[in-house]
Length: 233
Image 1 (cartoon, one colour):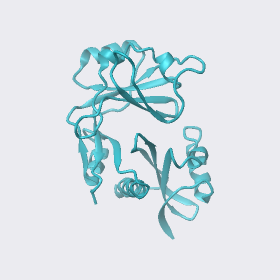
Image 2 (cartoon, helix red, strand yellow):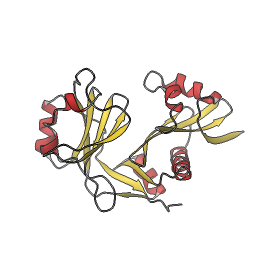
Image 3 (cartoon, helix red, strand yellow):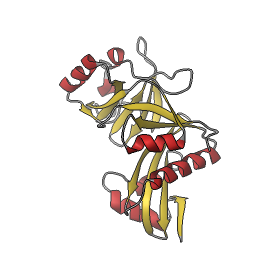
Image 4 (cartoon, helix red, strand yellow):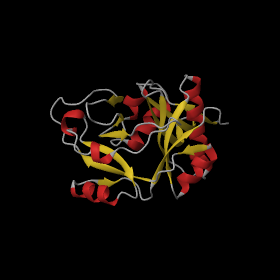
């Protein structure tokens, strides 16, 4: 019988998803850490239709991506995202974060979820960090609070530390203050080989600066910070 469920380390479908996504994702390891990761699947026994991955940090559920293994329709990604949000609320996690593309299918899914967005279009750049041995904080999330520097939340996802700017009154993160952040000693501040900086799409000097540093843009379209209201259906 086809069902939607949260993957656990001893679920027979976990090994199936792991085999499909390794080495990019270590699903076996992540399902052993339910305080940091959530995986939801639509499956018929061990036959997996699709999976959705999320991270937990800063009291938020970060929706990080859906993977389809069979020919499925538009509703699959929406159904899995909605299920993850519901599971997070059952665990007492009522805040969320997702990147909302300004065009493309993902925008339509975000609209169905009732996502609220920050108005600033951003480009996400992945920048080499070259961490020193044993440098940087450990764990999946935290906050950088350095003298004379902006307060930045961070989320470690595999090889990349994702940076989030100071939150506004609505609780959603804002853009990273590029001029203040770019020259921080990232080789000492992070433990991953890359950092991800979201900068305003209109900031051409910042874009050119990042490209000279070997940065790569993460998505085709500009994105918006988004979240789903706790009371959304």
